[in-house]
Length: 173
Ligand SMILES: [Zn+2]
Image (cartoon, rainbow, N blue to C red; front, side, top):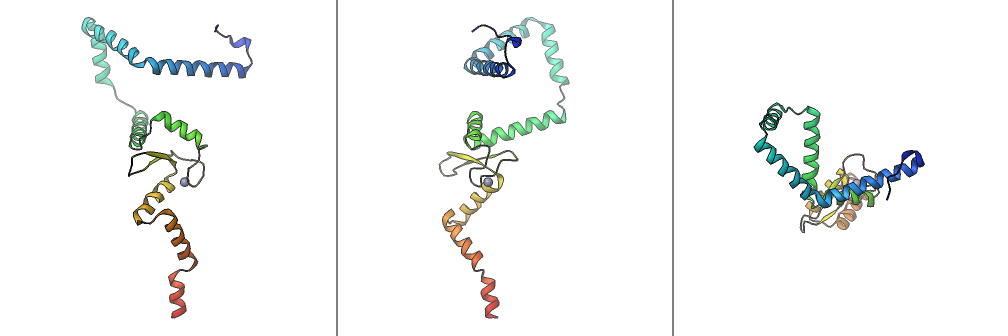
């Protein structure tokens, strides 16, 4: 495929072309990332051994590195997200696929996500189940804690709301 020129295409064609390029780059990067990383590491090791200036630069950079509060917050958020996904047995790629599959909505209540979706997994099998909003994720766990199935819980909750004991008590008083 020859290189495309921006001037020769419509904005849509150009955007599609860029997207394709990005995807190709991503695919080949992921396919070769260990080899690439190893090549870079080998080169750096060699420079570290033979180039005092490089060594000094690296040491100074390390000593002087002060992350900004924003960088720290971003790192914390990424770490949290990664460890949550890991807990749920989800790879970041699967997370993205799930999000698209669920149409950016909670798999239980169907509301659109306004905050980071929570990756839900089965605590008995460890299998990932899907993405839930914070409310549904916590409700699921809390219903489980009652020892009732969700269906039993729903039936009993409805019966309770329809006929709350306080009403009977009032009638009896
Ligand atoms: Zn929900």
